[in-house]
Image 1 (cartoon, rainbow, N blue to C red):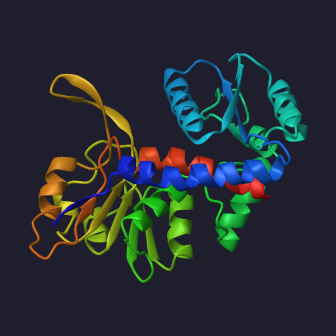
Image 2: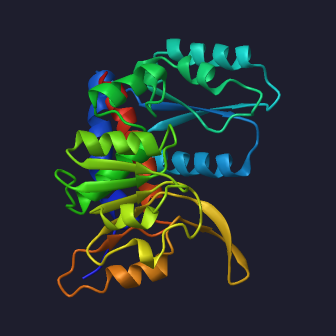
Length: 294
């Protein structure tokens, strides 16, 4: 029987324990009066997609008792001014964690900006210090999307230990940390990309396929077997029945038909939207709770 790996279902269930954890942390840190955990979000410019993502984070924060401080900066702001804002947040004891909403304008040095975040407040684990930790040491604070993928599989009791995993996409903030997390959990990982020679051969050989390319229709029915787990992290917009919709890398209906064609069961797939996305937001705030412990 085919399993739909719903990130919304997993998020709503895991949200309960996260809210309880955050309440406990607030009470311990703020004794005798509770001190709220606070996430600072830095937004540079007015990209509509960035604003939508931030609104999603703010809504979730309200649901679990976390405060959000949005620092909205003009697109033409200088890099030194952004770093100065981050340094203020680093020193502010009321701020638990900091995230810069990516992407930033192209005239800015993304790495310099990210590395100005104090590592203990780096809730997305993408400062150079934290990248080295999860790349080399396999520590639990991974970028939110990677952690979200891991927790989604764990929620549906899909272990990675001993499994072969094909990660398609090698981006520094998504594909690479997902591959590192899978290795840390005992999987044998193959990293591919959209130009890999004979991608079909690589995906058919895997137990778990995780695609993070952002190319609609990249993974089709020919790439999968009926007993595989397919995790679709890619996001892009495509015309569907005359309307522009958010889609993943996987041709969902055709791949779902193959995965469902197994009397013994075992096939599983994430939908887009509603799969990895909700888990990414959850994982960001789980990272925030971990930063509060630090």
